[in-house]
Length: 75
Length: 207
Image (cartoon, rainbow over all chains, first blue to last red; front, side, top):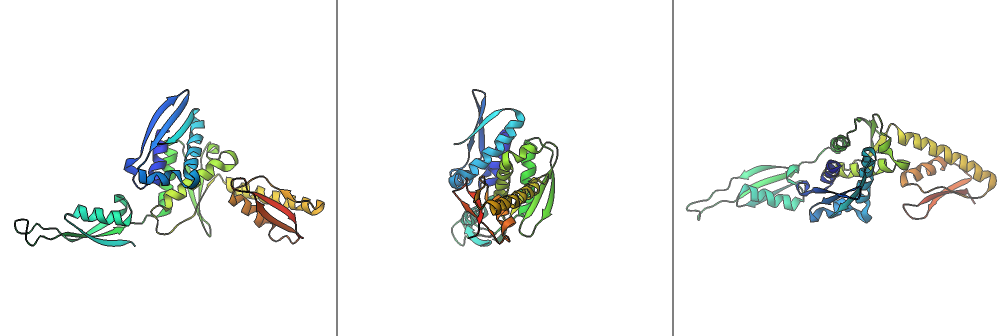
């Protein structure tokens, strides 16, 4: 799951070397904290959060397969 | 602006300046050294700056799209075969494999999200934008046929009863299919109302 978020984020930003994902567990929910360069925030969130929403949708689909609950936070 | 020339104390500095001005990353350029830097006598006289020409390397959006999808499916541990087809205004990447239902999601939501991300990734370093449509086992094709049939059936109902019919919310692509299906019907008009993402098509009698 962590790799999936990294792959997607790195493909969208101008500074892929600054993409990192931290994994935490919170009450049976996997929480992924995605960090990107400040200049790349717009490229990962999008207008009205459209890109972030698409990213979460794809990650949720992958989570169903692995039978886990996930949350993606952009920090 | 595909190519610019820059000077700097070192070659690296000149290249970095050019990259900054072009707004690209290191992987997406190639450079040519026009002039090697030299210190000159005692590092004081006759020193020459490095001069480089930096050119942006555009990438083929379809190759990038395929690579993007392959990486995504790899991390999801899905075995997917990507089949490329050309349409007049877009490239269709049809995905085949076992258990790909999860890539479609409810009403194709996951498929739309994946397609959106794939288009962004593919066109990031492209010279010309390419529209990429992602389909899974012809899901979109079948959905389009279902929507066209639904449109015709509902238009029939409107003609018989005279009342307008409001459809369930659809995305722009699906709404277009409904409009197209009924555009040649002389007694029927279609239009959309409401705001995204709840915009709906209305089928009504022409006045």
